[in-house]
Length: 57
Image (cartoon, rainbow, N blue to C red; front, side, top):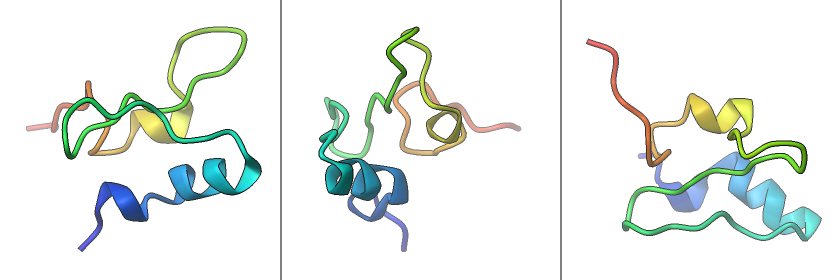
């Protein structure tokens, strides 16, 4: 089962020394953003663990 601890983007960020995004709730994160804007990284926008993620019904 995929969990936030297994997130490829977060693991890569930690490996690169960027750190992890903020996690306010146990299974939700705020995702990474760029220096130019506060918009989340494209891959984070599609992630179910993103704080603002809503399932498509």
